[in-house]
Amino acid sequence: MPNYGVPPLVPVRGEGCYVWDADGVRHLDLIAGIAVSSLGHAHPALVEAVSRQVAAIAHTSNLFVNEPEVLLAERLLHLLEAPGRVFLANSGTEANECALKLAIKHGRTTGRRYFVAAENGFHGRTLGALALTGKASIRDQFGPFPIDVRFVPYGDADALKQAVTEDCAAVFLEPTQGEAGVVPPPDGYFTTAREICDATGALLVLDEIQSAIGRTGHWFAHQHDGIVPDVLTLAKGLGGGMPIGACVGLGDAGTIFAKGDHGSTFGGNPVSSAAALAVLTTIERDGLLAHVRTIGERLKQGIAAIGHPLLSGVRGRGLWLAAVLTDGRAADVQAAAQRAGFLVNAVQPDAVRIAPPLVITAEQAGTFVAALPAILAEVAP
Ligand SMILES: *Cc1c(COP(=O)(O)O)cnc(C)c1O
Image (tube, rainbow, N blue to C red; front, side, top):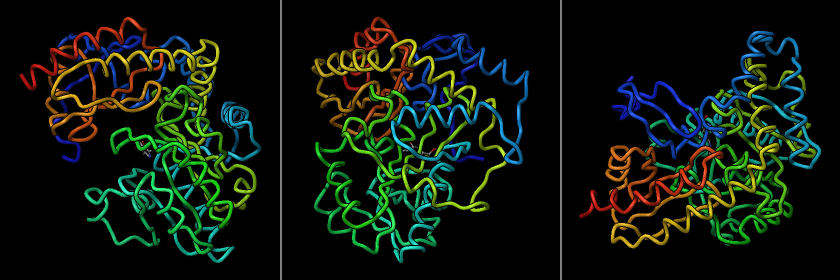
């Protein structure tokens, strides 16, 4: 189907932070399949875990249980340092569907009728997640939706306070808006959001599908703010390239569902769970959180130091950055970068997303910073 348009590249092989296309050309991967390939490509720990598990048993279904899914759920709760329950799904949007059903049930049992989400937010393409997505161009033609969602400007604590009353079932937010162009919140925004939800009884649902698993230099981006959500959704970087999603209900939110309320045939798949365990183990063993903070800061400063009229600045945290342009030329920058051997993503007309594998070296990041002036010059001489 033509929904993705014409693809600019056919990757056929990867190793570490490099991918090779069908013509044998090597590229430095600075987008990691949209913040997914956290350990880079063909990482030995991922290859070993997936190979071992697929050879043992590839699928059990939710009629039974498998060891990797249980270990993964326990590991996630350990990293969150909070009691809770985990539902495993196969993608980001499915993790959010689970969160939304939790929120709907919470609303039904407490007489709450509407939901709050952020303008320009992105939560996925299935109808529930799409109803929460604050981007008219992908949302409106598929409405109306069966739930009442009220949108507030992202980062505006007063608007959030106005919008969230005791009739609100849940607030859905990204700790940094990813698809909107890697837009971090103002300081203190999430502390206020937590306070508003505590005061009104609305669930605070954090969509960390793109921001978690080390991407910002912490396991979870909300740990920058020192808050704990009621519900947390994960996907992308968790499986290191294998499809997986997770919805974590913390505290009481973990016990909203009763038997029969939700399910997924593939959810908790042992191969994807084994991959996720390998990702988490490798991040811990190799000290990748500190590595992300160090390399991310260098990359950010390196880009910020480039003086070019097309470049207005750089935003983001850890290895999740956007080079912000003064003009809507991001697609041209993406194409010029690809010709120079670097894969980046024009996430918005004026923002180029950089989200490399967490294992990228200082030297590899440095080659991009060194090449960027010429890439910009090619687009805007
Ligand atoms: C990618 C993304 C999703 C959707 O995940 P899929 O796996 O594409 O369904 C949802 N929320 C956020 C914040 C995302 O970045």
